[in-house]
Image (cartoon, rainbow, N blue to C red; front, side):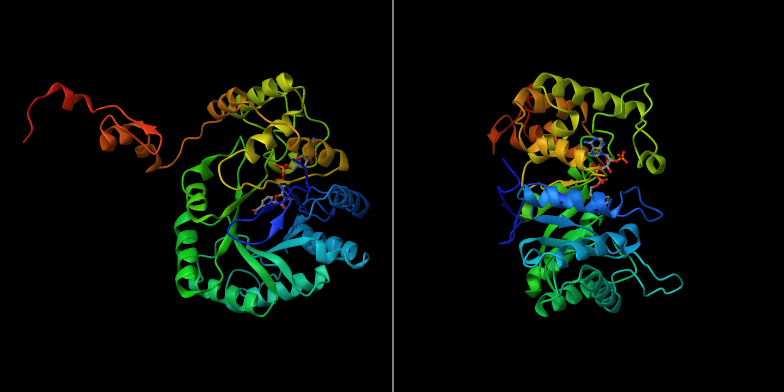
Amino acid sequence: MALDHYVTLGRSGLRVSPFALGAMTFGTDPGGAGCDVAESEKILATYLERGGNFVDTANFYTNGHSEKILGDYLAARPGLRDRVVLASKFFFNMFPGDPNGGGAGRGSIIAQLDESLRRLQTDHLDLYWMHNWDRHTPIEETMRALDDLVRAGKIRYIGFSNTPAWVTAQAHTTAVLKGWTPLIALQVEYSLLARTVEGELAPFARDQGVALTPWSPLKNGFLSGKYRRGAQVTDSARSAYVGGPTEADYDVIEAVAAVADDLGTTPAAVSLAWLRAREGTVVPIIGARRVTHLESNLAGLEITLTDAHRRALDEASAPDLNYPAPMHGAQQAMLQFAGTTVDGVSSEVYPPLLASNVRY
Ligand SMILES: NC(=O)c1ccc[n+]([C@@H]2O[C@H](COP(=O)([O-])OP(=O)(O)OC[C@H]3O[C@@H](n4cnc5c(N)ncnc54)[C@H](OP(=O)(O)O)[C@@H]3O)[C@@H](O)[C@H]2O)c1
């Protein structure tokens, strides 16, 4: 597997690299934990030279500087823009005092897109994400506005990030039934230290052929290998914003380190390989503050975990899922399949049925 072994993103014809490059760290503006323009360009150049084609940013990252860094880089290299799958996001309000400066209403999406296109120096985005759920705007208004932008040629595909599963399902189904542009991908927090997406959004995505593109796949670097229980992390800009792992996180970090030792690779590579191997199309968005981070994270494409490794990691990181997920395990199979095997799921017979001869 390599960056130029592309996958189609969800139910679409869009071919993307198996790892996207996140540009949230591009720029040193206040509020970020990123790197300067020169290092950002080195990270981008390294990713593109290796065959990477999928770049993720947002209007809000480093106060718009991330988009400008990408726009300047692409504009200076004729032809390059057309080879890159460029994704950005709307939602966060960059205009203090203006309630329509952000969110997901019709006018604000159009205005946010125009600003992103200006900073990115392009006339279209390949993928436009809703960064977060706007509970003050009807979802059909958002979906219709996005469909209009697709028809106008200003965006090619759409996806949601950080939106509840019931809203996501409502939006997607409405779009499908009305012949509007459906979702092709969900950008979700997903890593060995954040698996609650497996309760609702991941099953929805699998069912509808929608791709997952996990953000913070190393949980802000906690899974990179530089966080060790009882040791101080010295080289991190992010830790000032997010603190450090919990004691429970360290249990998972140690399980990852054991697999990495076994395979002679890094915990970052193991964590990313685990994500890549989840069911369905899963395209992690790599974060890097230095070119060396990117290089070591790309090793996640080179290793293959054994079934035993995957089982050990699955068990060490098993999430507590919200109701009703706990109702859908072995007990439910026992209650509905009555000792048979269905779709590969085997079951036992409900013991009181075996104990009694009485049938009413
Ligand atoms: N939709 C959303 O709400 C949302 C939210 C967050 C991110 N995202 C997207 O997802 C992308 C990736 O997220 P992320 O940056 O949080 O990913 P991440 O991989 O979880 O964290 C990246 C950070 O971890 C550290 N790191 C990464 N690899 C390392 C390595 N090999 N060795 C040592 N340290 C390493 C670096 O921080 P330090 O060196 O400073 O410790 C780096 O900036 C973003 O760029 C953005 O595009 C989206």
